[in-house]
Length: 96
Image (tube, rainbow, N blue to C red; front, side, top):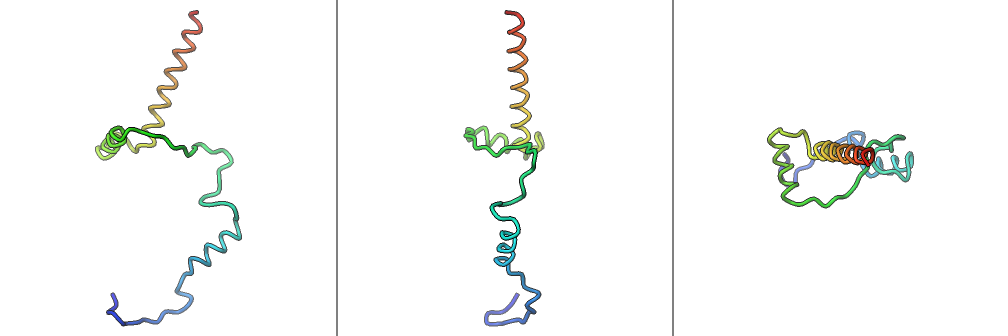
């Protein structure tokens, strides 16, 4: 830690100009932010409104080690319920 008013000398090659790095990255891959898109995306970014108490309970479940993370838990539970709904719907179609 430097005292107030102290200075140090560094070589130019030891400094990274992040603005210059960003400009170079933009020139190399314009109109893209973040990672390049996968040709077969497996996930889609969505926005959902979830009750505060449900979100907090999911967080508690993560902290307790009951679920690995909120996203995976929601995906598994929604997928299971959809399978259940569709299997019941196809079963009722056959009985009519």
